[in-house]
Image (cartoon, rainbow, N blue to C red; front, side):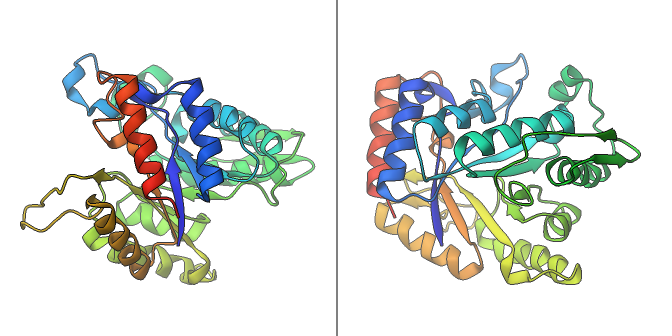
Amino acid sequence: MKIGFGAPVAGAWAGPDNLGYFAGRAEELGYHELWSFHRLLTPADKDAMAPVYRSVLDPLGALTFAAARSSRIRLGVAVLNLPFVSPAYLAKQAATLDVLSGGRLDLGLGTGWQREEFTASGASIERRGARAEEYVAALHTLWTDEVSSYEGEFYTISPSRMAPKPVQKPGPPVLLGGSAERALKRAGRLGAGWISRSATDLTRIHEQIAVVRNAAEEAGKDPDGVRVAVRGVVRAGEEQRGENGERVRLTGSYEQIREDVEWLGEQGVTELFYDLNWDPLVGDPEVTAESATARAKEILEALAP
C-alpha cells in the first residue's frame, strides 16, 4: 500500500514555510503523495463546523506551491467540490498544475454539501450526481481532444481548443469522493478510484470498497486496478474509543497506527495518507504555529514509509 501525507493547508501550521518544508521532507522520507482539500466558506457560527475547516488554503494553489518545492512526490486534492467551478476552468487549472509539476497531479472530485458554499458560488445543490457525470466527461474532452466539444444538460463546450494539454495521458487521474451507494458506484464506473471521507467508518470500509469495485467490473473495468485512497485521520499518542468501546483505527501509539495501516491494506485500500489537518493539535487555527509544526514534524518522521 502506498503511504501519503496531508499537506499543511489548514489551521495553525498552514503557511509557505511549512508547505515548502513538508513537501520536500515528505519526498525525502519516501512518502508517495501529498494531499490537499477544498473548503471555500464556513458558517458565521464558528462552532458550527470542526476547527479544521475554519482556515484553509486553496487546494490547487497550495499544490502548485508544493510542486515548486519537490520533484517526485505526487500531488493530490481530496477532494475539490466540482459545483463551485466550471469544468472548463478546472480543466485549465489542472492541466497547468500537471504541466508545471511534470505530470504529478491526482484530481479528486466531490459534489459538495455545505449550503453556504453553494449560495456563494451561485451553484445548485440539486442533482449533484447527474452533474458530476457530465463534469467528468467535459474534463476528458478538454484534456484529450484536439477540438473539444460537449453538449449536456448542465454543461456545454462549443467546439474549441484548450492548450497546453496535461502531461499525463489521457489526463490527471480523476478519483471521486462520496459515501452514498450511488456515489460509490459512480466512482467505480467513471473514476480512476474512490477517496474516502474523514468521517468514514474504517471498520466497514471493506463494504464500500466492494461496491466501488463491483461497479467497476460491471462497467468492463479491471476491479483490481481501481484505486482506493483513504484519508487517515491520525490521533498519535491518543487512543480513541468508538460506541462499542473498541479502539478507533489510526489512534494510539505509532506501533498501533502502523498495524492499522497494514490491516487497511488487507481490506483493499491501495493508498492511505496521514492527514494531520484533522488533528486539533495541528489543524486548529487557535493553537500556536510552533506547537502545531513541532507535532506534525514528529509524526511525519515517526510514520515514514
